[in-house]
Length: 141
Image (cartoon, rainbow, N blue to C red; front, side, top):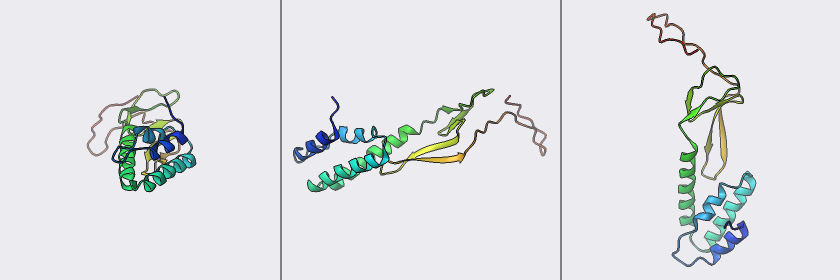
């Protein structure tokens, strides 16, 4: 059963010394869509950990959770998603669609940052002949 943020914060106060911080505290961070609200929740958890004199432990675990989440976000099996595209191409960790080409990164505070490569769609449709070697690897479309 999912607990409210207040219940999770109160639960930290009752946490016996030496017992690990509950994973629910960290997983719930990723369910908070609002950046300001997420920051407030992180700081509230950090404050409780500081009161318990376990701030370093809390910060280390938070960093590990954020790193793990970021790695899971960077799927490498993305494909292009353009309206009316003549073919589908692999685009690795990039997201390629009608809104442009970008990737997303999560910083150590849990903020999602969009890194834009191009603000409009780009789709290669043909590979031309190399004028220096006269080699032609073929066409894509």
